[in-house]
Image (tube, rainbow, N blue to C red; front, side, top):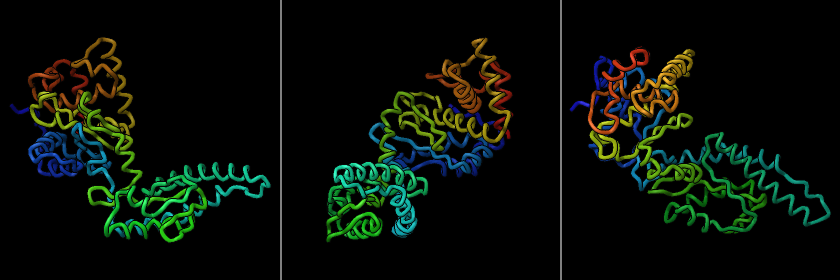
Length: 344
C-alpha cells in the first residue's frame, strides 16, 4: 500500500529528497532504512523542508544499544580547528583567572586553602560556561592534585602518534593555569583543561560526548520518537522506520515529530499561529472531538497528529484512524488550517 498521501505538487520532488537527506544525521542506518526515512520526510512540502533545513534541524535514528554519542551528532575536530580553539580560549582563561583570583593575604594558611578551593570551583563553573558559550568543547577538570599528561591521554583514549599531538595541545591550552615539570602537571588554579577525547579515530569534544551520552536509544523505544526544539533535534527509534514496522505499523513517527517541528517554526514565523492553534484545540477539547487519544494531550500533540494525518493514507494496525480523509471528514476546521499552513 502507499502510506503517504502525495497530493501537492510540492511534495516528493527531487529537491524534497535532497533536503530530507540533508536533515539526516549518520547513525549506521541500513541503506533500506535510510531510503524509507528519506521517502517519509519527502512527503513534507518543499518550502517547509527548506525552512527546517535553514533552522538547522537534525533527524537522528538510534537503536536501543546506541546513545547520541554513537551518531554523527558527536562533534569531530580537525587539527586546525583545535589550534584556533586554543587561541580563542586564551583570553577567556585569563579573564577567569582575574575574576576568581582569591585573596591569599590571610595569615591563616587553612583559610587560604579554603579560599583557594572555592575560588577554583567558581572559576571552573564560570570558565566552563564561557567556553561553551564560545562554541569551544574543552573540558574543565577541577583538581588541585598533580596529574600526568600520560594519565590524561589514557583517560581521553589517546595513544600512539595522536598522543604527542594531544600532549602538545594540553600544554598550550593550560600554559596560564598550571606548571609543567616534564610530564607532570602542577595545577596553580585548581583546574586543568582537556582538549579532546579520541573516539572511533576522531578527535571529539569531551563535553559534547558526555552530554550526548545522556540521550539513550533504549529510552526511545516506548515513545518511538522525541523532539527537542531547543536543540533543533528529532530522535527516532530504529524500530519505527520500516513501512510497516513491527512496533508502529504504518504509523509514520517521523512525520509526527516533524509536525512538532513545523508547529514550533510556524510560531516563530506567524504571529497568529499559536493563538489559532490553541483556539482550535480548546474547542475540540470541550467537545472531545479528536481523531486519536494522543491528539487530546495538548495543542502541540494536536497539531503533530494532524500533520501526520494530512500526509498519510488509511493504513492498518497502530493508529490506523489517523489519516488524510478521516481528518478532512471528522475535523474540517483543523484540516483547513493544516492544509493552508502546509501550502505556505
